[in-house]
Structure formats: C-alpha cells, structure tokens
Length: 413
Ligand SMILES: NC(=O)c1ccc[n+]([C@@H]2O[C@H](COP(=O)([O-])OP(=O)(O)OC[C@H]3O[C@@H](n4cnc5c(N)ncnc54)[C@H](O)[C@@H]3O)[C@@H](O)[C@H]2O)c1
Image (cartoon, rainbow, N blue to C red; front, side):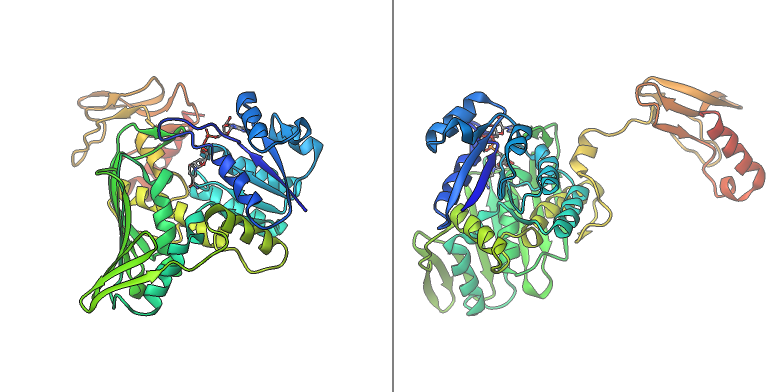
C-alpha cells in the first residue's frame, strides 16, 4: 500500500486556469492498479472539502497545508498539482522530507535553473519524479511510434502541431513538445522561435500571445508548433510518402500508396492512470517511467529555449546552458538601469540620456556639452547600478582610464 498526497486539489474554473487537475491525479492513482491510500492537501477549505467528498476521504486524510501534511506523516508519493510557481519549492520540500516518488504537474518549473536543481537533488536523494505529460502514455503515442518504425511515411519526418484558441506554450504546447520528443526518442538539438509578446500572464507567470516554434531533431526529423491563432488543436506527422493524424480508433495515414489505419493498441491504462502506474512500478524497481524527469522535463526547457530564441533572434541549442532564467519574464519585466535612450556618437558617451527611474548619482562627468551622470544606482533597487566610464578599449587598457573606472565605481560604494 502506498500513501499518496495530492497537494493542490483544485477547483474547476471557466477560463484557461482552474482545471482541478488534482482530481485527475487522484482518479489516476485509483485506476493505476496499485493499492493506494489518498490524502488531500489544499489551502482552500472549499476545494479541500469538495475533494474529500469526491474521494470519500475522512478528515484525518485532509490537510490545510503541506506543512500540516508533513507534520503528520511522510507520504510515499506526492502529486504536486498547484500553480506553476509553487512546483519548484514544493518538489524541493518533498525531496527534503524524504518523499520517494513525485508526480509534478507541467510546466515543471518556471525557469531552467530550477529544473537543473531538482534533477540534481532528486538524483542524490534517489527520488523518482514524473512530469505530467501523461499523453505519452496514451494509446495514440504507441500507434504513432508504430507508424514511424514501419516506415509508413518515409523519410524527412516532420511534426506539425497546432494549439489555437489563444493558448500559450507553457500551459498547453509543452504537451506537443513532449509528444514530439517521445516520437523522435530524444529532445531536439535546437529550437528557433518567433513570438508576439504582450503583457499576458497565466497562473501568474509571463506567457506569450502567439508563437511559431521550429525544433530541429537532426536526422530524426523536425517539429513545427503553432500556438495561439486559430481554433482547436491538432498533431500531425508528415513524411516524404504522406501524412498521419490521430483518428477515432487509430492513426490514419494517407500516403501516395494509399490509406492505412493503424489501430490504437489495447492498453489497460492510459493517460494519468498509465503514468502513475509507471511511477509506482519504477519506484518498486521496475523500468524508468515514460514521463520520468529525465525524459519529460526537457519539454519545459524547450519552452524557455523558444522564449529565449524569440527574445534574442537566435536559434537556441539544447540542453540550455546560457538561458538559466525565464526569458519572457525578462521581456515583460525589463530591469531599468535608471537611464535610457543614450545616443553614443563616435567620441562622446553622455549624450541624450533620459532618466527612466529615480536614481542616486554617484559621480558626474563634465564635457563640452554639459554635466552628465557617470555613475548611478537605482533608488528603489540600490543593488542595481550602472556606470559609463567610456566606450572604447582604452578604458580598460590605459592605466589612467582604469583608475577613472575604479573611482567611478568607488563613488557608488
Ligand atoms: N497535465 C495536464 O494535462 C494539465 C491540465 C490542466 C492543468 N495542468 C496544470 O496543473 C496545474 C494546476 O492547475 P489547475 O488548473 O488544476 O489549478 P487549480 O486552480 O484548479 O488548482 C490548484 C489548487 O492549488 C491550491 N493551492 C494553491 N496554493 C497552495 C498551497 N500553497 N498548498 C496547497 N494547495 C495550494 C489551490 O487552492 C487550488 O485548489 C498547473 O500547473 C496547470 O498547468 C495540467
């Protein structure tokens, strides 16, 4: 018998948030084929009560916070079904408390540094983690793999995936990223993306309004993902010989040689039940789960790579080493250094600076056209400062110039 705590029971909303995914996890455990005892944890008394009633739990199985849960027991498994910003701290807490199995909702983290930290800490503690890209466990994923392995579509495979209705990548398209990674049996080498970026937020983190992402899987194929515009969602696989799509009872392939229907394999457990069955089996010494952190966390990383690509206009290689932050947050919340609109002519620097936030000036420079700030820091964020010692290599090479830089910096201490 495994004790399983669902942290974040949820409440069904009407928009793009509020899926009460905690209920789907609880149902998944109950259908996983393993003997489980469910606990519920939620800071909302209403959501906790509804969950307790839905799964027939006694008050001793319900907790008003993770703190209260861990004070009472260490569950074998926790499902983290709260909002994305809470995933990372709640996984860290679970690992630290000695929980040996975690199912974490997507997006797995809100920046890449968090992914790396969890990977390292889970490996050290021997904690098994799955990321809830449960579609990998659906029957159509197996049927697609069969279509590929039998060469039905020929060479030059390309996933064409679409998520319309104004959705965003972190909330939805990461599932299709993960599906492409599953079909191509590894993550892409790099991604290239274009995005429309406004002020949109979902679950309190920055999201884009619309995007096109290209993912390069080398000789294995490529992926093209459109998110935002249009209606509905679709996932198709194209090859030199034809195209395959998800039908009602199998994968339908239209090729130059004719039509082929590859039926979905009969599976006793799909979706959440399949994923959670595999987590428990993995914890008990069985094979690595399909949605293991090692296989599925990279779908979240691809989202950050796409954001970074849109921000910088560059293709971004995986695994990420450079963009160890959530790039859209940077675009939506740029750090103002206090002055902007500087125009830098050939020989002068302090021209046309415009104050953009309250600053404390440490040093000024007097030049022919006036007196200008040379070193300053933000009043509201005093740890952020800027200085303008010059813009030429001389500034670093010539001793007198170096002294000037040192004096400039010291003026801010
Ligand atoms: N895998 C999927 O197919 C799928 C589908 C939908 C949503 N999701 C993901 O599931 C996650 C949750 O989304 P949702 O729509 O179910 O949200 P929700 O609002 O329905 O549920 C979140 C719950 O967490 C609770 N909560 C908040 N802070 C808490 C805390 N500190 N301790 C305990 N409980 C706390 C809230 O009270 C709420 O009941 C999101 O990351 C979302 O992207 C995944």
